[in-house]
Length: 125
Image (tube, rainbow, N blue to C red; front, side, top):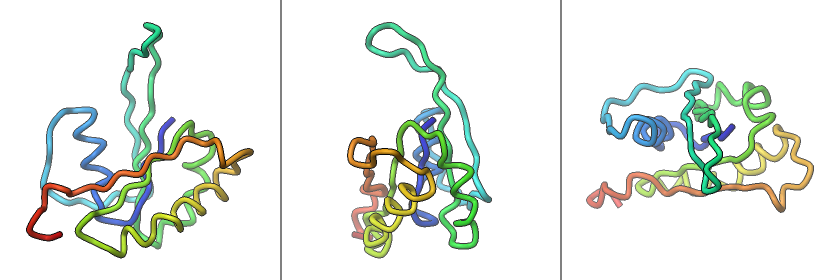
């Protein structure tokens, strides 16, 4: 289970859709609560696993739902928008919220990934 978190509108859903379906959609539709999709992945040792990618709402009104979605996650991807400095400023807040709500035993060894999204929007940077 991998969880995508970050401010609303940073492109979490677009990253998920691009990874699963290899296509980009420019239509923005806010995620309500959370959504997930599965993908079968073959690891280096030829072991196959089914990965769940959870896409969470970044809007403040859905923050209380986090605990249900974060628990049991094997990794967390925090996404920010390179054209939106506030979304980068909020990265640590997202990390702390995840650590608290996921009830991590040892946050120092937990796999967090940070993605700066919308790098292709050069004129907006």
